[in-house]
Length: 400
Image 1 (tube, rainbow, N blue to C red):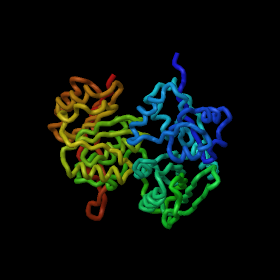
Image 2: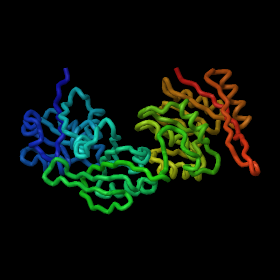
Image 3: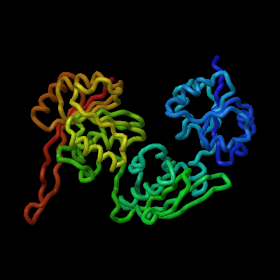
Image 4: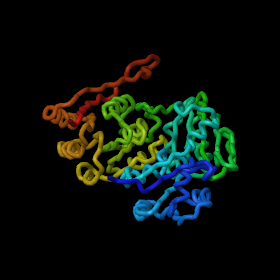
C-alpha cells in the first residue's frame, strides 16, 4: 500500500498563524521545505533545509522526487489545487503519495472583500500567461476575479477593457490579503493610474458603454471582427460548424486550412481551456490568424506551416477536426485515423470539386450531410432585396 510522504501546504499572508494546528505541526516537523522566497519568509520560524523553486521550473518534479524518504513539505500560495502548482505535482506524482493542505484561496478572500458570491463570478488566471486570455470573458455585467502576474497586469487589463468599450467598469486591486500590509486600490479602466504591489489579485465588474464591443463566447462572432482576405468561414456557417464540432473543456481541435483562424478561435473561446492547432500553408494567413487570436482572447492558438496530410504526423491526437480547405481522400484518411474515439469531424465544401470528394466520402462512410445557404438583405436601388452567399455543403461524422 502506497503511503503519503509529500505534504503540499497552502499558506497565506498570515504565515504559520493561519495554519490549522495539525498542518502547522507538519511544517514544524519538516526536514526539508521547498517553496518560493515569499513562502520561506512566511515560515522563517521553522528550522529546516530550504530549497527554492528550481530553474527551469520543469526541473521541479525531479527535485521533489529526490526528496522521497524525507519529511518533505512544499509551500504554495492559497489552495494548492486551484490554479496552483499542486495540480502540476499531482499529475506527475501518484496522488496517493501526497497530502494536500488547503488554505483560503485568493479568489475566496477577494470575493469576501468585494461581497461577491463565488458562484456568480468568473475565476481567471493570467499569472505567467498571456493577459489576452481574459478578453473572452469581457461581457456586460460580468464579474471577474483575476490572478495577476505582477504590478503591471492591472494596467494591461485596463487597456483591454477600455479598447472594447468597457472603460467605465469598476476595477479593484487587492494586495497582500490577510496580512498586515493588506491594501486596496479602486478605479476605472479609462483613468487607471495606480501603482500597486506586485503580488495582487484583480476584481473587475464589467460595465459596457452603449457602443461597447459585444463578443459572446457562443460561436458566431461578426465577420468584421476578424482580419481576413475574404476566404474565411462566414458568421452563420461558422456558428453551424462549431455546433457540429462541439467544443468541450480542454479539448483539442485541428483546423486544417485554417485561413484567418476564425473557426479555431471560436472553438477556443467557447469552452474553458479548449486548445486548437491551425494548419495553414500561407504565411500571410497565418499572420492574420495570429493577430485575430490575440485580439479575440485566444492567444494560445498554435499555428503550423504546412499542408495536410504531410504535416499531421506527430501532432497530439485531436478531439475534433475541421477541414475547411484542401480536402482529399488522403487528408480525410489521415485525419480520421488520428481522431480520438467520440471525436467529431466536420468538412465544409464550397467548390464543385470539393463537393464531389465530400459526396463520395459520405457515400462510403455515412454521417450527416447538409447544405447551408445564407441570404443577406442588401440595397437594390432605393429598395431592399436578398443577396445569396455561396452555399456550403457540410459533412459531419462522430467517430465511434
